[in-house]
Image (cartoon, rainbow, N blue to C red; front, side, top):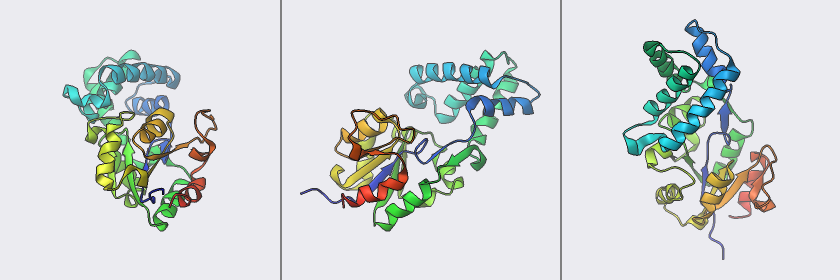
Length: 239
């Protein structure tokens, strides 16, 4: 007999909300405020190069290497602008500081139209909600300004946990917070490896949110969602 569902865990970025502008556009807006004109295309390319480098050298915000989310992101911003020929150290620090804090503002995020209703529907079914997200310490502030924080019993960011998805240990920490067996927990996320495979590897009922209809062939139809509108009916079948 299948254990009744009690909890739903959520990924955040690109599941419940997304950044409103591209990195290139956002960084160029900050540069323009400082009197610097840059190409969003060039900045975007520089950012992706630097981001990949930092992710490889200092995984999960470098917390095992004496960094944290803020110092990690400020380093990414400084190095991105440096690749775009901005060399003044004081200016680089100012822009890095401003951008780090600007991403806590609601106008920089777009909540998907189906997010709030899906969260409300899950709660109305008597399910408790938590977050498991590869995110830094700004997670709570961002969910607050986006009007989503009150839906969750707990938040678990990779910076807080000290480990990041797809390491299944972060889901182990989440299960401890839930206080129920993995079979009584579902997880919703948009990443095939980080969300779907990692949650299922510990026995959680993982669903893959596939808004762009990429159609991972390894994911059974009953585990795939094209919209969060489909979620409540799927969860009811497991209660």
